[in-house]
Image (cartoon, rainbow, N blue to C red; front, side, top):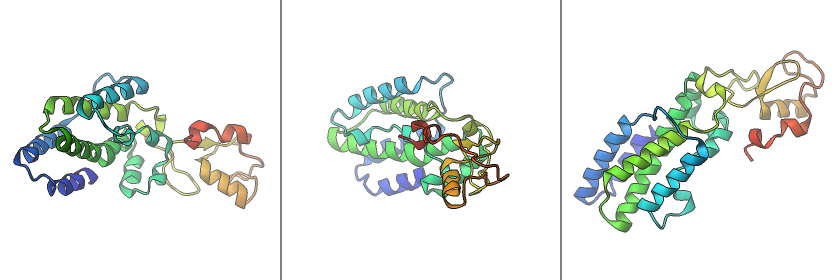
Length: 212
């Protein structure tokens, strides 16, 4: 798991006993953390993350902010991460939980280390608040229903689909797979060979689906 690997790698940098103790306590917090019962809208959650970052790392860089909105645009197969792809198949939010363990927790470890080196000993309470807000932010994205159900599988590449493109004949594929098929094979449905299965390109290439 990426979170355990990140923790192990950071241990080599925890030369100070107090920092090592803090990180062990923080790790225990992160392992037990659960999403809040009520999760705020994504734009509110992002604002809260930035506000908390200003308290802990006043001079942080934009890439320091642990915000993972971009993942809501990607198909699991696009991430080049076999574990994430396997989790996506399970549905029921497993992909979002994997996002938390694989990307968010390692990011928080790095931020704690950065804050400790810049500003000295840290307090666990504000870091716990930040972690909770980041976790809620992961679950509060505009995920498709497939993320919390058992996702369908693309008949072309056989990978799970979070943003399926439905053809006019009623079949669903990854947008990239469908476009590749139409470009290479011809304008017929890959399953039933119905002519011109895709919607007009200005509909198919919508900003939401292309992650723009």
